[in-house]
Length: 155
Image 1: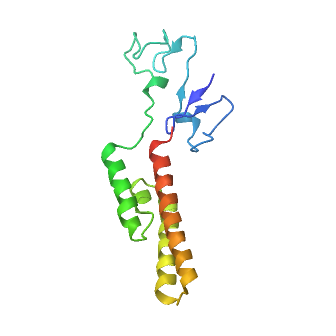
Image 2: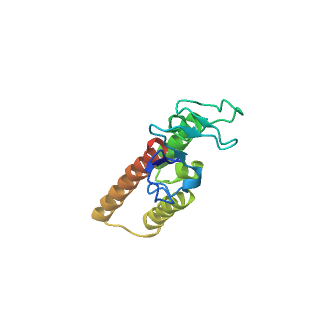
Image 3: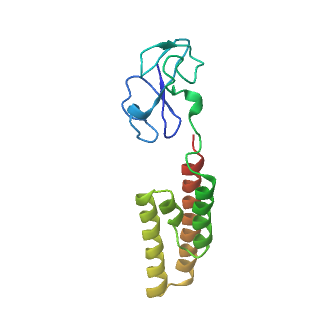
C-alpha cells in the first residue's frame, strides 16, 4: 500500500525508502489505507479506516487527511516573501530562503548578489554589459521569487 510523505504530501510506494520529491524518510510518512482496517500501533487492535482515535486505548491514528499542504505558517511565509521581494529590488537575493531554513539555496543566491555587486562596483562596464548585468539581476529576482514560492506552496 502507498504512503504519503509527511513533509510534502507526495505519494510514496512500498519499495521507496525516501520521498522522491523532498527526500524525507518513509518512517515519518503516513500510511494510506485503502479499503482495509487499520491496526493501532499502540495496542494492535483493528480499527475501522475512518477512525481518528483507537477505540481501545485512545491512541491517535495517523491518517492521510491530516497532512498539511503548507508546512510553513502564514507569518513565516509573509516574512520570507517580504525578504525575497524588498531586498531583491536592490539586488540582494536569498534572504527569504534563510527564513525558511533553505540554507544552501539562500547562500547560492546571496553569493550571486555579492558577485553582481563586485562586478558592478569594481569593473568599468560598457553600455552593453550594463544591460546584461541588469538582465541577470532581473532574472535572479524572478528565479529566487519562483523558487521561494515553490517551497512554500508546493504539494
